Image 1 (spheres, rainbow, N blue to C red):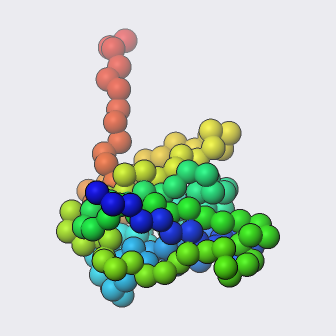
Image 2 (image 1 turned 180 degrees about the horizontal axis):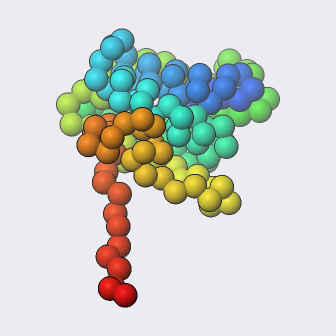
Length: 144
């Protein structure tokens, strides 16, 4: 499997939400597609990952139809220079067929955030969460 890298200019060039929307347009180029809707359903948590500069060193990795896509974000003065980003369209729709995120970088532990289906897709019941999210694992507790 080949790998494609994209570098998106984030803060201060644009907000975390605006950066995620730009990423969604590249991964799912068709307006109104299921893939685009699924990506936009997690805008809040993705924007938080981008805003905390987590995607600077740890990529967002998407895999499915075509090549694996690794997405990094660029920050600070580097984000203001157009030559530093690579936000070119992909030669394929990364959300067609059986696709998923292989990796969403974890939030810094100091934030104390626990991710669940409801935090990833606010307002969505767990049964209707985006298909690329896996079920939350729970540990069984001994009685008592």
